[in-house]
Image (cartoon, rainbow over all chains, first blue to last red; front, side, top):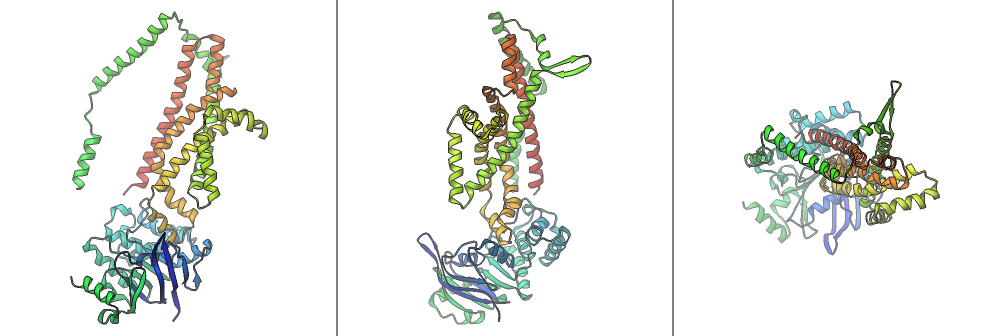
Length: 245
Length: 276
């Protein structure tokens, strides 16, 4: 299978602090990878390196056949293929929902306003909130905002979607509506890397689960194997802590 | 929670107001007191008021044709300097703010040197440097010396206000723009600046009003603005009180109109950006 994302011995430092320590990861096209681990383990840093919101200090990162370098033009092109959903949604508060969705297709892909709007409505339908198109982000609930954020990324028709703790800022009753959308996306064959603590989602949608701790990939295994027979003691401890409730 | 905040807001905006009659009464007392003070002061120094001689310096009607007097000519020059300087000053401010925020070391250094130089030396000295040093070297006439000097002066203050506004937009907004594949310029244009503008505008309004007031300084290099016209008329007529009061009111009309225009724009921005 074609490799969509490939990290080879990646290191990342924040000052003296080693955030990523020799991280290697392969993600094939259509694969859904869930990344979990305690806070501060480098999960977010790792996926932020994949679209270069953070620059890695050593090692190689390849995204759909292109190596991430300092080349800004190439980087902008790569980012068009990599959608990202943030913990804090990061919707544009000064733009209506539909304008949030059409901005990048128009300004980065050069679509006409009518084409972009049509695209936007398609994806708003997919996240089940076409009726909110004219509203502003501040008028929506957290769950609705996050679904708009997912639709905004999808409007660029990316090959890969990165999710950085997409449900961590949500009230419990809104988590499901976001996870449902993500599961639908997974069923459609999108390549996804999801940083999350939602093990239910991992079991339902992921092919592979990666456990990180202290900047290292401790364990990387097919979903079933990860939950039924984890190898490392640290993984076992982590799983026992989050699954007992 | 929501109820609580709305009551606080209501309490703040619906401050108890005096009735219109009390307000008018207070204003009348205040106003007449002020006028009485000026008149009494003038009477004590045996000042002879000659208000009837003032209108001819504003306008004349000769053979049914309206001719502007020197004060209006001066006012137009002041407006012209103001208009050019506002545009140029904002451009300088914007460029400097971007340079200060850029990744380029030399860009940041250049911007910092400019800011420190301009903000830590007297405006009058800057004007002399522009007029006596840069003017002859680059063959700039005095009008443009005035415009350039004032633009660079006010632009330095605008730069810091603009920079502060840009920095107040959360980092996540820029990251969201970048992750969507928008170029840096597009991110600034469509995401950062529209959100920074409502924060930038109120303090920027103060800078623009200052710019108009500071432009009076160009009289020292003999640019025929409103202040120079006033000085000229006084040296011919000795009507210092009448002319300075007239000149001051003309400045007041410009600055107050400017403030009104900006606050209208502010309200428009608020309505269109914070509809949510």
